[in-house]
Amino acid sequence: MFVQTCNFIRYISICLLLLMQSAFALVQAQAQAEPNIENWKEVGRAELSVLWFDVYDAVFYTPNGVFQGFSSPLQLSLDYKRDISRDDLLSETDKQFARFQVAKDTRSIWLTRLENIWPDIKEGDQLIFQINTTGKADFFHNKLWIGGIEDMQFSEAFIQIWLSDQGEYPELARKLKGQ
Image (tube, rainbow, N blue to C red; front, side, top):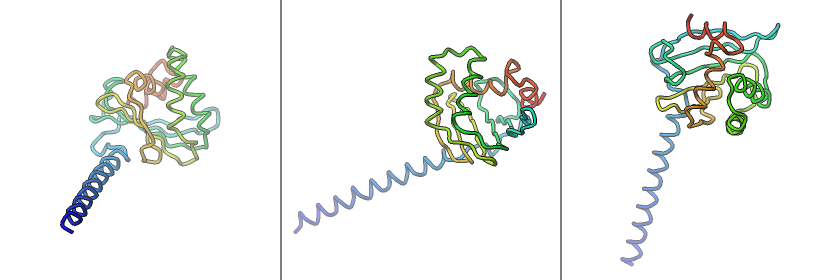
């Protein structure tokens, strides 16, 4: 009887330990579930329209409200004004990467990763791109974390689509950078 009681206590102890580990993992996941920019400052905002179609409103944030380079911590928030399929987002992203001379093999790897992260976008949806202090890219859809890419080269190339003066929309880049 004593052995059975000890085994039962050991079993309960292991279950409690596993439960505590699961709770800790859940708290960590929830901490990453939303973009963390409570004290960040807006650098600039702009609207993208193509021909007569409104595409999105964009807002750019940094910790101090100043653009300090493509690899610094930053966040770009896009509020969509129309439906856009994931395939169209991927195609346009590929086109923009090619504009910045990203090698085709590299683009292919990045686009495969994005294909596994991005959803189809519906009018009213928000897509957020955030670079943290280590250069990791995180994506949020309607404020919920949907995936990340740990590749500083990706992060820098991706944000250049919106912030580079050599991008397809230099006026949008200037407004986002507060110029």
